[in-house]
Length: 144
Image (cartoon, rainbow, N blue to C red; front, top):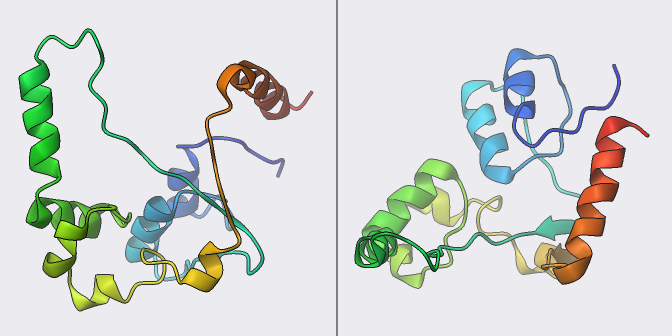
């Protein structure tokens, strides 16, 4: 089997058994593990990646007050905790902590221990070099 570079289809390929190994988003992997107990997860002991998602409102949004209200709703502690336990991703929202289950609070895939985080590389915006990165990544995906 040749390598496959895809940030979405790997979930189905893992779930169906077509793939036995994949580098994927932690929340996706956790969802697959919940449906198929044969799978587990691991992270490299020396290094890993760390990313952050953001809520943004485009400058030309049609309904800025509604968008802001929706973001505020998602940031309410109880809502944020429910979302975190559903998608298996850490929400950097201290208001969610009191609403989280003990299982989630003790889940090292969500609350990564400090000794593992110290070796994580935070992915940063490449600015003007982003187009170069995209071009090179496309070449890797095409295999040339």
